[in-house]
Length: 230
Image 1 (cartoon, helix red, strand yellow):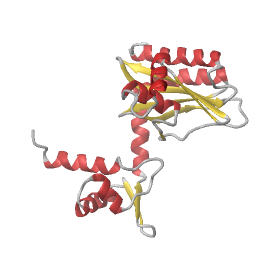
Image 2 (tube, one colour):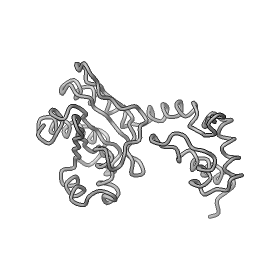
Image 3 (cartoon, rainbow, N blue to C red):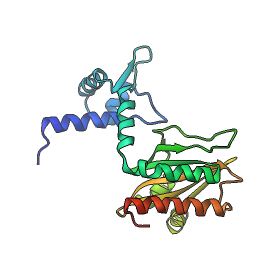
Image 4 (cartoon, helix red, strand yellow):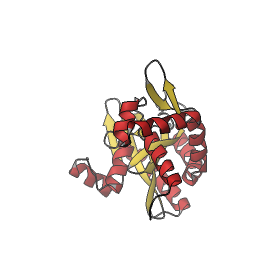
């Protein structure tokens, strides 16, 4: 069925907004044009419309676009509407209190993991806490590796690592002084989120068996409440 003009307009607007990333929050018009696959005039017209609606901002001095303030309001509404966030919240708070570590829920979508809720370690003098809305690297974060291994046949991951993650149904990543352990959350057989524990490497690693089991159990409890397969 041919795409109607209104549907095409929405698809193009979303295509432009989707080009912005956490590691690349500013894009010029030539960059938007090249990456969107639209013509320069078309890209400029859509960017101008998105600016009028507060979905894009334009820095006159630097000649670059960034996501606008209205995105923040839409993001908060979207997060609040996700069932997994409301169900996982109390479980995350209990786990953070039990382990005295930061617990992070990230939404799995289109092969990516996006931070949607954080329960901070209640008794740590120094907190490790990612920003809400951060899109985690699919290969260089435990949450991203988990989503990649379970939903994209491990594309880009070392095959042995991908196989290990699938077998464990967990991903563990230690980088310097810090460690992350991530477990999957399912709904109706679909991976909808990851739940992760963040902390110092000595406390969050493959040797932290009590932490691993507590996280696994909590993620499974949330999956059961969502009606997922565990």
